[in-house]
Image (tube, rainbow, N blue to C red):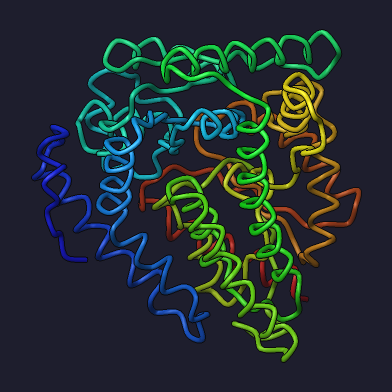
Length: 426
C-alpha cells in the first residue's frame, strides 16, 4: 500500500507521520492475508480498493457531502445506535471501533492496560489523532453495553462531544419502554444538532436504505451455507467490516453485485475450498478492521469460516425494521423492536443468543464453533460457561479462543485451531 497524502488529513489535524506508518503496516499485512487467496470472486476488487484507501476517499466523500448539504457526521461504536435516524435527518453515520494494537500506546497514557482491546484501540486512535474518521465527526454516540465503555464515554466527552444511549440489561416491558425513551431522546438530540425535524417520509426512507444493506448482507451470508462455499470467510468478513465505513447505497449495490457472482458459483458447484474442508462458525466478540487473525489462521490451515455470530456478522443484519407503519410513532416502535431483538451478551438472561448460535451453526453446516473472546471482555467470557454446555448438549464441538490484537499468541492459536480441526474431521 502506497501512502498518497490527502490535503484534508492536514486540515483535520491528524498525525501525518504516524498515519502514514499505520497505513504502511496495513499495506504489508493486507496482501499476505487477502491478495494471496486463490480463486477469489472478481467482485472483491471493489472491497480491496475500499480497504487500501480506507483513510482517504471515504473521508473526502463525507467532507464533500457535509460541505454540499450541511450533513452532520455522526460517529458510532455499537450496532444498537439506529443509523436510520441519522440518515433520516440528513446525516452520515460512520463506525469508529478499532481493531489494531497500533494505537495502544496512545490509549495507555489515559486508560488502564487491562481493558478491552477494542476500547483501547479506538481511544488510542482518538487520543493520538491517528484516525481521520474521528476528526471529521460532529459528535460521537456511545452506549452502555459494558462498564468499561460507560466510563470511557466520560473521558472521550472531554475531547469530543459524546452522546450516550442507555441500553437496558433485560428485555421486559419496562426495559422496552426505557429503550423507546432512549431512541426518542436520540431523535431529539439529532434533530437539535442538525437543525432538522424528523418526518414519517424521511424515517421510512432511512429504514428502507438500511434494510436494503441488511438484505444484501443476508444474501451474501446465505451463499456461505453452500457446500463448498463460494467465498472465503476472510472475504465475507471484510465485506461486513466495510459496512460500517462505506457509503450505504453504493455499498449495498456492490454487495449485491458480488452476490450475483457468488450465486452463479454455487449453481456450478465452484467453491474456494474443497467440500471436505472443516467448516467453522465464529461466535463472540466483534472483529473490526484489521482484526483478521482467527479467520486467517483457520483458512491458512485448511479450514474455512462459514459464518459469524458477532456484531460484525449476522447479529448486525439479521433482523429488518418493519417498514409498514404509517405514523412516526409506529415507525419508532418498529425501530425499538428491531434493535431490542439483538442478542448481545450484556443482556441477562440471554438464552436467546445461545439458541441462535446453535441454530446458525446448524444452518451453516458447521463442523464446529470457535468461541472468540477479546481479553477483558467479561460478559462474553462468563457467558461461555452456558454456551459451551449448550453446544455440547447439541452435539456441536466448540473451541474457546481468548486473544487481543497482538501477534504474540498467533502460533499458540494456530496449534490449537489445527488440533481442533483435526479432531472434528475424524
